[in-house]
Amino acid sequence: MSEIKTKQIKAFGTKAADAPLNLLPINRRLATAHDIEIEIMYCGVCHSDLHTVRSEWGPSRYPCVPGHEIIGKIVSVGPHVSRFKVGETVGVGCMVDSCRDCQYCKEDLEQFCEKGMTGTYNSPDKHIPNGHTYGGYSESIVVDESFVLRIPENLDPAAAAPLLCAGITTYSPLHHWHVGPGKKVGVVGIGGLGHMAIKIAKAMGAYVVAFTTSESKFEEAKRLGADETVLSKDPQQMAAYRGKLHFILDAVSANHDINAYMALLRVDGTLALVGAPEHPLPISAFSVIGGRKSFAGSLIGGIAETQEMLDFCGKHNIVSDIEMIDIQKINEAYERLLKSDVKYRFVIDMASIKK
Ligand code: NAP
Ligand code: ZN
Ligand code: ZN
Image (cartoon, rainbow, N blue to C red):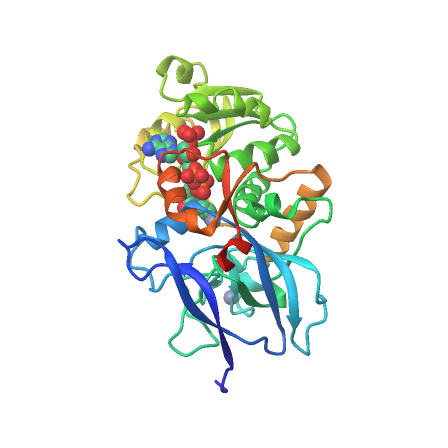
């Protein structure tokens, strides 16, 4: 590894799982040959940020600077960058690198790279010995151009930021399991991911049923595009959908009864889990054997598919419903996220980090 030049910038992160996020300095490499340096304008707040900051998925690397729904302006490019120019508005999602050589990388499935993809945060940094990656709760980021996305010009950049994770994480399984006209699709958990799933499944032509534990979202889910809404705490409302759905996308961030949703699938139906709760979810054998059902999962999406999703959202004018915050409000935002109290994605106005 040759000597890498870095510069210090401002970021927000934490040094321990039980400590709040605070202003801290980090070092970013200067753009190398294929790199793009992006001044970050907006960064969405994903529930994965909270899981990672608090080491809920196993020990994280500290200091931990989260954020993988990044939109910003290109401020410099390396000498070999060919696809982007200074001044363009671009996006960075959940990955910033992968091996690019294994069977999955070659199939545009970098998220399943055999050598392990490089996450935008909390992954070993290939450029800095013993270093790890820092995410978008920061002034700027440097990313290889192959992992930078184009943002359709008709989309509001702040509201487009959540597409980089919540958008692709829901688009990819909806696409993979052929959601479209004639399909009845359930979306469980109307948070950042769930509300995008409603919008995208609707645009794909499906009939969408939203399942929420929050009374305040019951009517709103229809405004987001759902054809019907179910208050999942009410067993009678749940019973009305037994055996009715072709596909369910489950985007719940905490423990819940998965068997209650498996029961809503038709024969040969699939429930795909994208939510990643801290603890295992028990599933009964009888939830899958009766009805030949599938319990599946999905992880974000590849770079080419992320661009396809962005272009789809551009064509259908789909963005996230956001609540903009200053970075200094991030700890409060996390507490509200835990109470399912956000409609429907916090987005950080990153100019606030200069305050
Ligand atoms: P979020 O905005 O906090 O939404 C989660 C929703 O789950 C809440 O709004 C709530 O919906 C529901 N919920 C929360 N606690 C619940 C409980 N105890 N019982 C039942 N329902 C509950 O989170 P998010 O950012 O959308 O992320 C959702 C999950 O997906 C997280 O675990 C995140 O780490 C994971 N994720 C996975 C991937 C992937 O690639 N697979 C990518 C990104 C995120 P209602 O108010 O409607 O009930
Ligand atoms: Zn995410
Ligand atoms: Zn690979």
